[in-house]
Amino acid sequence: MSKFRSVCRFLHREFGFLAVGLTLAYAISGVAVNHVDSWNPSYEQTVDRRTIEAPGTGPTEEVAPVVIERLALAEPVRNIWRASDEDLRLIVESGTIDVNLTTGEAVAVQVAPRPLLRDVNFLHLNQGKGAWTWIADAYAVVLAILAVTGIMLVKGRRGLAGRGGVLLTLGVLLPVVYVVFAKYL
Image 1 (cartoon, helix red, strand yellow):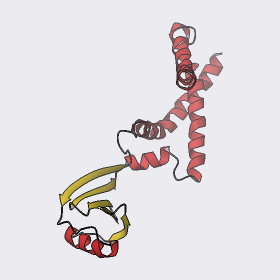
Image 2 (cartoon, one colour; image 1 turned 135 degrees about the horizontal axis):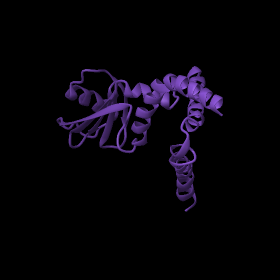
Image 3 (cartoon, one colour; image 1 turned 45 degrees about the vertical axis):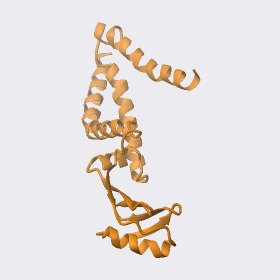
Image 4 (tube, one colour; image 1 turned 180 degrees about the vertical axis):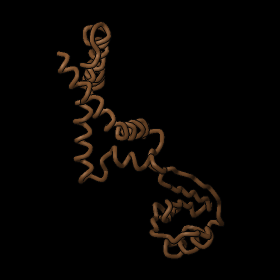
C-alpha cells in the first residue's frame, strides 16, 4: 500500500502544479458566470441619459438624420431600428442609443469588454471550441486524477477512515441532494 500511496503522492503533486493556472482561471470565471443574473461578467455596461430637442414622429428616413445630428455622435451609426412611432434605436460600434422622438430623451448604453475576466469566461464557457475543447477535456481528466489521488494521501483518522471519509461523503452527497431537491421536489 505504501508504493500505491507513493505513486498517488507523485501524481497528485505533478498534476497539481500543472492544474494551478487552469484551476484559478476556471474558479474566477465560475464565480463570475454564476452571477450572470446580477451583472454581465464579460462586458462592462455604462448608461448615459440626456435630452435632445425632440424631432417629432415623422418617417424614419426623415427623423433619423435629425436625431443623429442633434446627438453629435463621435462614432458612425451602423444601423437604425424603429421600435414604434415614438422610439428610434441607433446601433453604434460601442452599443445602442434609444431615442424617444416625442420627448427627446436619449439613453445610450455602451458596452466594453472587461479585461482578463472576459478572456477567462471565454475559456470557461468553451466559446472558442476547437483545440480548447481538448484542453478542457484533458483538464477535467487531470481534476479527476487529483481527486482520486488526493483521497489516498492521508492515513488514519484524518484520512478515509476518519474525518476525510466524512468530508468525502458530504462532498459526494451535496450535488446529489441538491439535484434531488432542485429537480424533483
